[in-house]
Image 1 (tube, rainbow, N blue to C red):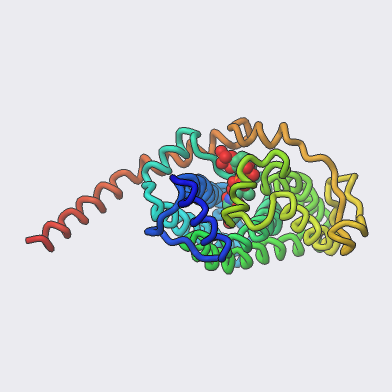
Image 2: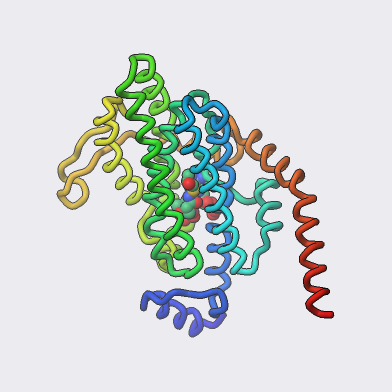
Length: 315
Ligand code: 3HC
């Protein structure tokens, strides 16, 4: 690509124009979007597994229905995002093979176990809460198909967050055992949830370029801070303790609006999980491999049917 072409493209980005699939774009722009959208889609699909674990064991029919709806939504989000990635010329098959081989990542958060029902509350409240923080700015991403997919995803995500927080309210304001279960879930999900935003800006390899191309509108640390500042009052309302002894209100933070200082994140844990060493990584990929294998006959049938239809039209 010539410097003139790259400069012309950057002018389009700076003018806040939406880039569409058939527009000329730098190969690096295409590549980083395939990487991010593909990994986002993988996260949605793998993210169905921790919660799927509780659909048959939900405590009431109402809880079962809400959880079933949420998990189905996540599958739909994966579909949108794989379709958005396909507009950039990558196939579903290739993306799935990269997930199953470990070449493509998915969000670290989904490699943690869900041993109690309170995990369903903590995931909705914290994981979907963090996802909303990250996905709202993506509605203004410079790549059209990704931005448009995010609008629908964000609407559904806020229902996910609310149903999770409502579970936490019922437990935290319930019996002492229920409150203890909610506190235990907060203790296990707090730090992995703030790791979801990615490494500190200083260690973020993609951020500079993604910010220049307006794929990323806020840095990892900015979104992490916004999430923490919004979530602490919610934990206080629940009467639960966030497991960070260094958490402290700092009135100078956020240009004087104030915000929370928080403790050091365990980046060894983060990278161990990202690199496949988390508690549930093997289970998650095994489950996805089985689903891919079990679904082969469906894909073959759909392709055979499509071929027949095309032949019919042609004759
Ligand atoms: N888990 C796994 N890998 C992560 C990660 C995480 N939480 N955070 C960062 N990484 C990876 C990055 O992918 C990158 O590796 P790569 O170059 O091989 O892709 C590396 O760590 C360095 O991080 P960067 O900050 O340089 O990477 P990005 O600029 O891509 O920022 C991101 C990371 C903020 C996650 C960004 O990719 C993003 O906004 N992605 C879209 C949103 C997304 O994927 N969310 C995941 C959760 S989806 C979800 O929660 C569904 C909900 O319904 C429950």
